[in-house]
Length: 75
Image: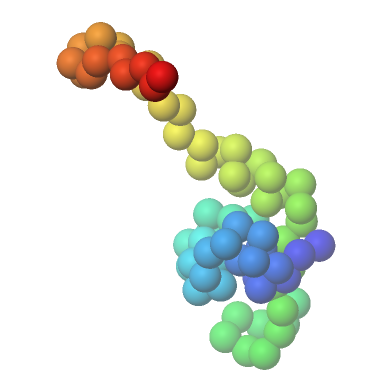
């Protein structure tokens, strides 16, 4: 189980973004304590991995010839 701070550090993002995901119910989590009260949010590592996979955006193939770039050779 990871805390919000650990998730934020692992992803190199702000803790407020992780809290936002939890508040918007995008990131499944466990809330120890009542909402708005002192407590702790815990996130399973497997759930975090699945969440990250669900956020993955596939890139489109690029036709390099259509970019009009020329190959430069260094000698």
